[in-house]
Length: 633
Image (cartoon, rainbow, N blue to C red):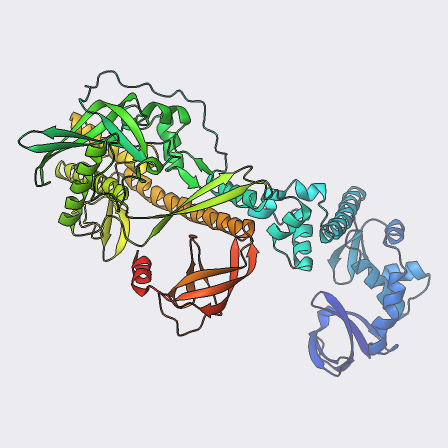
């Protein structure tokens, strides 16, 4: 005797070895023996053999049309055996009964299971809805096949093109378009970005990186809400100084300016003047909301996204020829360049000039500073501030700018997104020039002095601390070991960093004798500090990524196939004249930091962006000390 039984959602046939009423021992056609429950048995039969029953029944089941079966069946439950008898018009053979069972089981849309071997036909309205859904899925499957075929030929179906951003940055895998696209990626071996680029959905690699950044950091876009820029304060005393700023040619958010007044018999009074948007932007105002959301200006080659609207920046930037509101720190300095006292004021400062690096450095640089200088505007002030900066650096015992490190300026001409029409020029500039040191030292003095003032007055403040080599934000006035100061708080860039604006609010309240916006241990202040650190880091990562992208574009533009580099550590090298660090796996294992190598450029992937190089030869000249110093920086 043989049995047909149900197991694991399917049907199997076997020969009975032992029948124990509630259970049976059966031998499968494969020779495997199993114990099954009697309740799972659907049919007992002598012939055909267990090995051939399903083979005979399967083709018979395929000939049975489910819609015809549905028409034949009456409402109510029925057994497959009873229906097989009606269907064939005689007592069905085991293979015929099994064929009907298989046909009913294979058509769950038409027949709902109601127990062992029992079914009920689906109501007409439910069947109609189910069939419509099946047809929809069939059409969807055909559409997916068509989309995959087009994508594999690097043609962009409109339905896929409309989802470009979501496919790149936040794919919805429930959508058929996403399923088709990811299948095409798998079959072509390309990444999402590579496939979309080949199909023309991405205008350029630049747009890919920029749009990903906007998606992550500016999901609502970069446009500012319609807000009126606050006017200038009218009740501030006017400073009796001629101040000047020092910035590169592209700076529009000018946060700081300097002044020097000679004090006969004493020495001089050095003024550090910081733009004061904190006098007009109120904590909790809509403009504060804008700055709080952005937290910093975003910098990238050829473009930037400002923290504050242009109208606000225009009102409060320290533009030349204009009286500007400022928070000023005055240092009384003796002939030995020691600071005798300091005083902070809120005032209107006349900015006599905006000096630019490219205009000053040709005559004010490391080679010319110790000799006679040409008669240029603010020459005497610059020389005096240069000597004062050296004295400050000496007192701290720490350099303000690491020697041997280069800054890189990117000049992008043409349409940023057009690889053919856009050109990039990268210029290299040694960090640590007299102008760098002059500005850096005076900003360190201001940030350290004002941080100490707020700590002394027990006013909450966001500090930058460095202990055991780690730099972090904190609300405690801890030392900054790298700068050699007892405390350090960012306060000199309130137009482009939110933490500086927060600290300026606190400083203004302290100078006015008012209650500060943030109390000690303020939860809001802690939240602003955490968000600023995370966002500022993300913006810096994006800036580095875009600099790498434009470096790769520069290499392509100049058709560079080989390049020199300096070993930093193990397989890591820095390319000459470009801010690019990369790993070269083919580098010999015995090289030490500072050794110079010659590399072949094997591939450039602007979509990543990534550069692959191969070691060619070792160069003779090396500067191990400079490399180590660079690495520590």
